[in-house]
Length: 499
Ligand SMILES: Nc1ncnc2c1ncn2[C@@H]1O[C@H](COP(=O)(O)OP(=O)(O)OP(=O)(O)O)[C@@H](O)[C@H]1O
Ligand SMILES: [Mg+2]
Image 1 (cartoon, protein in one colour):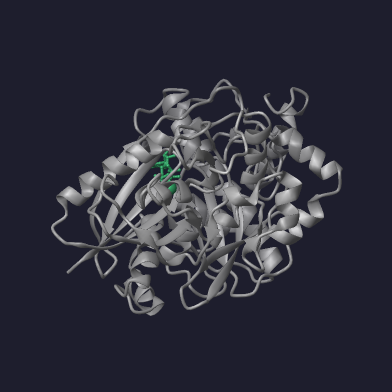
Image 2: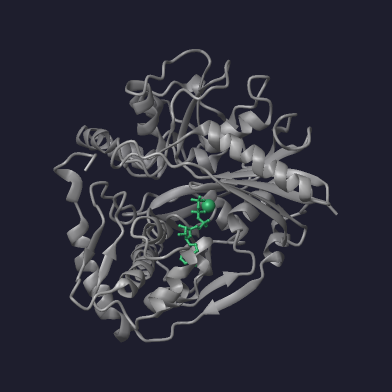
């Protein structure tokens, strides 16, 4: 039996994972990489370090696997922009990460100039520094990146694909619609780069990757990639869309939330692209080799698991992320404390790049336990805000939520989530759904799986969390949360984007 290998190039680390036919994991390897914060509100990565982490993790995993590798899939942190020189293979600047807020003033100017309706109608997104185009424009305007015939600009998936398939020696410069739909440059109805938007943001078309289906052969691995030579790279998707696929959310209405660095609620909405929805994003979920496509409605929450990391690294009140569960369970409630983790602004449904984190309601009795619990509660409450917006927009209330990602291991969090949403929250056995989704896309293209029915059949339940209390028990917290959110908004506006 063979396995499919997935490369999950996330925001904080790279994970390589191998999956068997039944969707169970045959092995993992993981490596963190450096986060660069050159100024407040700025976040950068070294693209060569990410490529090095990919080579190391895939080589380590491939060395341990007993089964041959049938196909390779790639999934990645979305929106992050890399500019490199196709002749030298060198990045021309640090990659600008999705969390980076430096282009907030530019987004304001574009909005003031009346460009938002075009952007929204064409891309399904909003004018927010989150997305790639203003970051690419910044690289060209202020980052010292010059337009030459060899300039390549892409998201992390295309940087990795290019390197895996040969780099300076004929590397393939391609991407697919789930990543491309996050750039602010793709027309999500035609699935082609939009000339109007390329002109608006000043991004040269020749630098961009070719847009191909998410599932289908992109190229084959070369020597030096860390993998055996000649393996087909046959599936690519952005991490959140890959998780939707890996969760087998394959029919309209099915919804998942991935609790990682941030949290991203995606609802499958079928194969036609609807009009933009207030507060939410419309995005391409995937396209398959047979021409089928799926769209998703998305709520993007920037900081959830990252707030747990802040408890660990910023406040040093826990040693490991998993310790938050015990500390939060040491108190029965937050004692009225709210943490709004708007550390990099607020995403859906508020879209406020100038919001910043706030800790409210502290009294003499407040201790570490309350703050830890407030962090978990903020994850559940932010998710609720997005789910409410989604129910309103789609016209059907959400009846259940599938959970995955690193923080979904936390039972207390998922219980709080079920209580605040008043619907059951289900966690699958395989919580590495991001990697699994990329593996499925690659394996489908190479005949490892015959159809998406096999993906549905593979999904296995671990635990369902049912609401344990009624609405009346959670309503007061939800009301004070709304007031706390209000206080975090607009905070950095006076200090400019760097505040
Ligand atoms: N038991 C836990 N309770 C709460 N949060 C946790 C727990 N374990 C891990 N986390 C959080 O989950 C996040 C890691 O999850 P995961 O690896 O899915 O993140 P990710 O978003 O995929 O990372 P990346 O962005 O690098 O892809 C971290 O932010 C960590 O703080
Ligand atoms: Mg991830």
